[in-house]
Length: 62
Image (cartoon, rainbow, N blue to C red):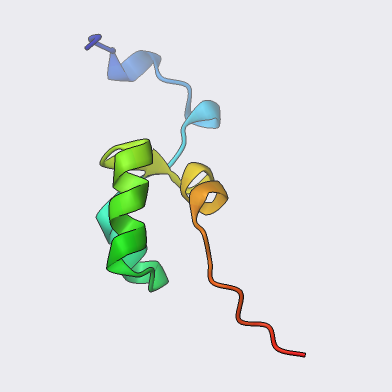
């Protein structure tokens, strides 16, 4: 792990990082899918990483 001086952080490039379990609970994602995401991404991930890796069931009917 690297030490980072807070004064030197660039706010323009900062990203919000979610705890995967919190994101899944708020998004209504099933527990099995949550476990899969934790296995792939770890405990923390950006919102973009989570959105790109969630497999949603196909609920369309014609």
